[in-house]
Length: 281
Image (spheres, rainbow, N blue to C red):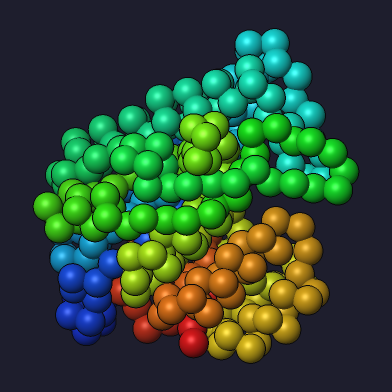
């Protein structure tokens, strides 16, 4: 009981500080695919919302996309680390992200006690994209964020709704593009003037020498993050790049944490020590 009370007391200044502030959370595809991990994260999001934070949730869905393409007999090919997304594939990608994962997350949050609305970048035309070009070849309907018009997102938040964003965008000609969810979350956080951007992944945070636990870094400033970015490898490169871009664009702090650890989101936001890696200006 005393530990519970102590945790509540410790959370008071954070609840006061972040009330009415916008927090953008990116939920990785592997976490969205896990019922147990997803349930704990969504419970955390409901609590953050109920204590007064304005939450925007951006999600991925890579594993489920791969499973769907396999089921439909569409071969998955990667070039330069990017999934080649042809005309047939983009239809299935949009169906998985917007038609299934997004609607399920929205329903779960509504059932959890907060008002949530699912949108993609095509709703209201708020997320404009351009085709991504790489030197290794044509990767089809894979795009990059061009512009974000935050009007719709701000309108939803001002009405008391939590926006749930599928990372599907469009270009000026109406062509559909699949976008990297980390990039979308970073761009949205910048556009809405977020206090925090939280990237939830399946590792504990930033390591100078992954996976050596002694090299884990719990707090970085912007310059330190840029230095570590020169040495990190694999999937941490795009996440740390997004973090640096968000900080440079005005977001106050970015957090990278392990979403598979139950209620890591609450521990990171409401405790002095946190649980992941925090990067701030």
